[in-house]
Length: 212
Ligand code: URA
Image (cartoon, rainbow, N blue to C red):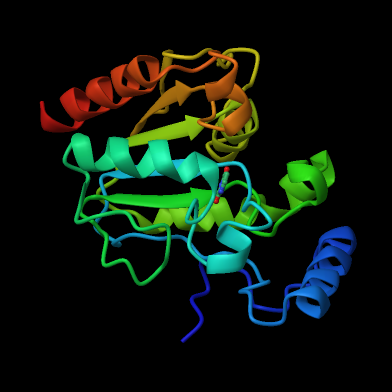
């Protein structure tokens, strides 16, 4: 059954994204081609917020970061730090289990060229807010990139100027703590903006924060 925490399959809030979805449904009728729901248990202590589904990844498979280049480093790191168990097989039936983490996106529909507009990010934010509200045991949030960071800060009604995005920074949100990381995108990892060690350092801090 559809969850009220996720947009409906035929969400019509963002006309440009609806057009893109319909094109993709026509070109690839066996893909998911719909808003991608959050993945992970309701008792999660950690929420990871990405940008938006990739066309041939999460938009195809229907699971955040699954089949996307960025998912390789993300899921490998979650397993390494005990947030997930099993083997990540880049497909929704790989049996990978998220233990105490949920993964969502600031924008739930695939945007053209991976670039949502400011209006689309704003329009989708109520779903992020509902997702956060629903996680009663939430201790930490990891924002992957500045767009996710800004969406989280606004979801908590905080000021962006008082909470600037910086890789490795953390922000007290008066409940959970927000940890910032550069996005684990192909571009960032191939150019060395984000190394595996840098990404793991963020998750080591998160693990320590949750376990203390
Ligand atoms: N796939 C997602 O689901 N989110 C991202 O931010 C990138 C790829």
